[in-house]
Image 1: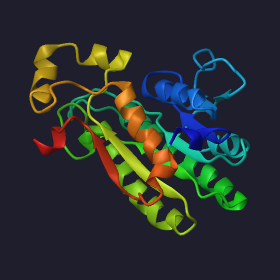
Image 2 (image 1 turned 90 degrees about the vertical axis):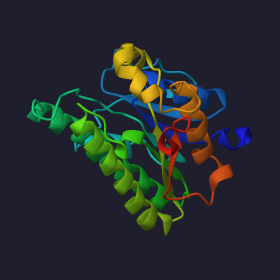
Image 3 (image 1 turned 180 degrees about the vertical axis):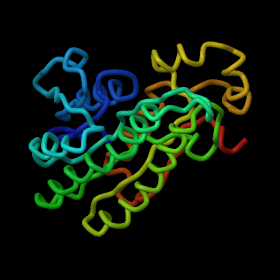
Length: 240
């Protein structure tokens, strides 16, 4: 599988931290060239022989032009995302709009640009959308986040049908809680984390590399007949 990535080009959104940063590093280590997309130029990884930082806000509809100008790539990882922790009664317009714009609408717009370039270049590429297990299992105080990830699941299915006719595959990775710096802080309270952790048969939350491993599989030629699916990376959470 490793040889597949040598010399190929990929776009990773939300590449400045957490899952996106890990996937970016892994792709570069495998010999791929990565366009690392993020909103804050100060937080983007430095340019290198196999890495090009790209400043773009995926929640902005006009980001299409920035992404399309990068030219054809072999794969896209739609990882950028935000979460507003608000109860249903306290949910704000800002929380709802930003979450849906970045987590769901952003995937559509970025994928439109990438898929168009793939189509024009005749590339049978792969698009991986980072969803979540709470697209299927609701938890309190995450109304907008749950809604956005549920939307991602359906967007992925539609993309797999329409883009599949062009040889472009679209799939989801659906992790449970991931121990990024932000995740470790957000779930450090046992009162909050234990109800989720107790339902994970493997007894731990996911690490960034757990998500990266499945993502690399979906980007590679090992998954050429995998299309339109959501792969849980959850230690058995959805099965429990």
